[in-house]
Length: 461
Image 1 (tube, rainbow, N blue to C red):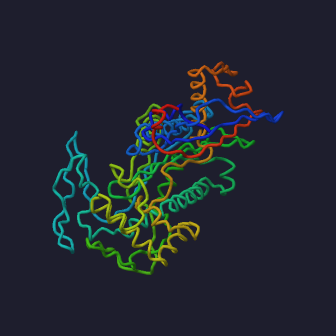
Image 2: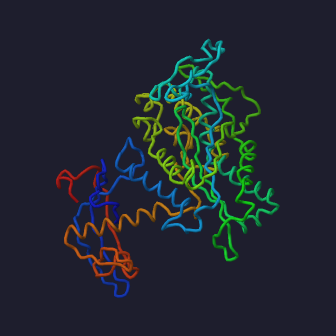
Image 3: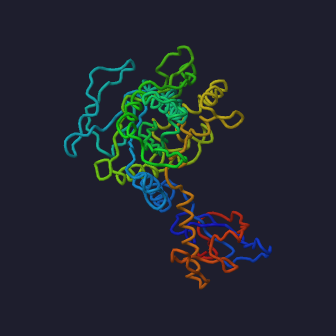
C-alpha cells in the first residue's frame, strides 16, 4: 500500500484504509509484517479544486512538471530534447449559436459583447451592448437559447477524442507528403510527440491546448535532434491545412426531438442523417522558444491551470447525473441544465445513442456515452493525455514522492533509514534493504474504511 504523503497530507477528504503490509524475501520466502498503524489515510488525489484544493494543487504541480520536462529537458528527459522544434496549439469548437462573451480592449476595459442589430426568429435581440466583467455569470450563456444547437454541441463534445485522433493521423500523412517521404519513412526519420489538455469553456464546449514536439531518430531508434526540414515551419503549415479540412462523421441529432419546458430546439434541420464534426475557425499555432514570449515554463503554467477546473464553478457537476429527476434537483443555470438535458434526451434514443457510440469507437454493451458523461456535457475523454515518450509520467513523479514520504515517516517514528548511491536518504524495508529493492516483494492487504479523518484516532495515521 502506497501513500503520497504520510497521513494523507492536508487532503480535505482523505480515504481511510484498514489492513496491513507484508514484506516477502524472494530468496528465502520469509514473510515479515511491516510496522505501522492499522488504519492509514491516503490522499483522494482529486484534480478538481472544488473537491479538494490541496490535492488539486499537487496534481497541478505534477502536470506542470510533465509539460516543462518535455520542453526544457530535465532529470526525467534527455537533455538533447531541449530546443527541439515545438509548437503550442489551441484548438476550438465551432459556433453552435451566439453567446455572451468578454472581448478584451485596451487595458482592463472590455469591448461591447456583440454589436449586431435586429432580432432572431424567436424575437430575441441578435446583439448585446453590455461590457461584461470577468465574473459576469452571463458569460457563455446563449443570446437566444432556442437558437443554440444543444444537440450538435453535446455530440461535438462526445466526438472530440475521435476528431483529435483523426487530426493526428492526417497530420502525419501531410508532413510525410510535404517532406517527400512515405509515412513509414517519416516514422524512421522523426517522431511527433504531444501533450494535450482539455479545457471546458463557459459555453459548455471543450477546447484543446496542445504542445507538439518533433524529435529526430538515429539509426538505432534513439532520439536525436530533428532534421533541418522539420526545424522550420513545415509541420505548422501542414497542421493548419489539416485543421481546416479534417472531419469525422457522426449521426445528426437534428432528427431527435429535444423539446423541453424551456423550448430548446435543435436549430439545424435533419439532412442526410450525418453530421461532419470538425474544428472551429479560431486556431492558434505558436512556436515555443526558450526564453521567448511562448516559453516552456509559461506554456506549462498555462496548461496546468486548466486541469483543476470543474465542468462548472462550484462543483455542481463534479459527479455523474443519474437521471433527469436527479438533474432537476441540482442548482444549475438554464444553459448547463439544457446541455445535460440534451445528453439525456439523445442518450435515451437507443438508435441514435448506439450510432454515436459506434462513430466514437466505444464498445457496445456499456452505458451509452452521452448518459455516462452527461455531467461533462458529453465529453468523456481524459483531461490530460500525452504521447508515450513525450516526457516523464504521473506514475514516476508520484513514485518519487511516495519514497520520500516513507523515508520521512521512518525518520519521524524512529524506524531505520539509509542512504542510496546518490547520497540521498531512503527508507529500508523489514529486511534492512533499501526501499524498492527487487529482492523484496511488498504485499498489501487493505480495505476501504471510510472517507475523512478517523474520528476515533483524531486524524492521526
